Amino acid sequence: MTSNSKSLLNHITCTLLTWYKTTTAQAAFEGKDDEEIWFGLEQEFTLFNLDQKTPLGWPKGGMPSRPQGPYYCSVGPENNFGRMITESMYRACLYAGIEISGTNGEVMPGQQEYQVGPCVGIDAGDQLF
Image (cartoon, rainbow, N blue to C red; front, side, top):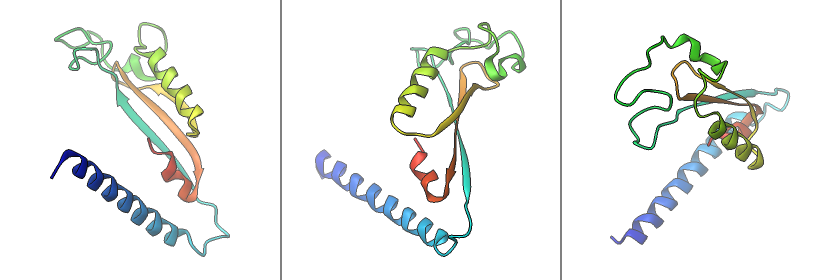
């Protein structure tokens, strides 16, 4: 099988799986017009240095010297790593139509989170990125 054939097969498989999951979800929502179901999603991720091994904000080959607590919500420049990257991605997602409602630094230096939603019903699946 050539790489083009594998790529096409992968695309078809992903398309069919997406259709199946969407169809299944639509069936679950059908007939519930009197209900408005809301979903909120969180997307957490870790930013890494260019060595692809060391999380942003960590000393190379080591661990942060302070406990994790002060990094949560990234208050202050000494606790926030990658803010420009996070805010750039935030703006790009808004431009793409993703309903991001917030972002914050997480407990570990270099770890970030986006909150998406609230989204109504099946539309929540379209917000995953």
